Amino acid sequence: QVHFVESGGGLVQPGGSLRLSCAGPEFTSDYFTIGWFRPAPGKEREAVSCLSREDGSTYYVDSVKGRFTISRDNAKSTLYLQMNSLKPEDTAVYYCATSYISLDYPCVAAYFGSWGQGTQVTVSS
Image (cartoon, rainbow, N blue to C red; front, side, top):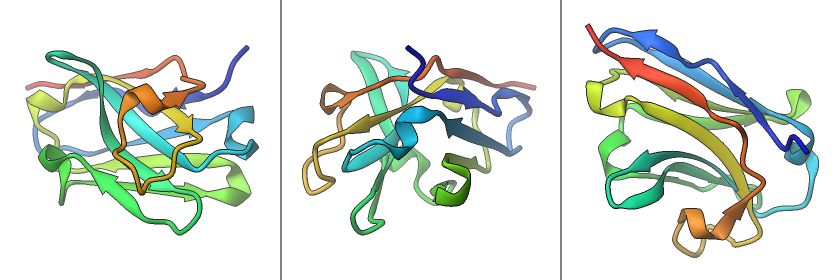
């Protein structure tokens, strides 16, 4: 069963930008939080950014604050991640997923399910 399809990844030079998209039937299901994740050393996946469906509040991991922006377009049933000022350390496969846990709690991968297949982002000169 396909929950989400992520797209928008690619090869970009340091300092460049990409916009990731996440769409699929799971977007309109019942959940509290939706987010973007990537693998990280010592973790299965780290939360890059999360968005509350209730009040639109957001979470960003420190390493992307001021550079990445999460948003959603309900009319298009799509979640976005605008990635600016990209760095080589942003290189990863990016996944989207949903959670029944409110963003009042930490945004961690263990609370999320319905994962997409991921889209590869490579930042290199």
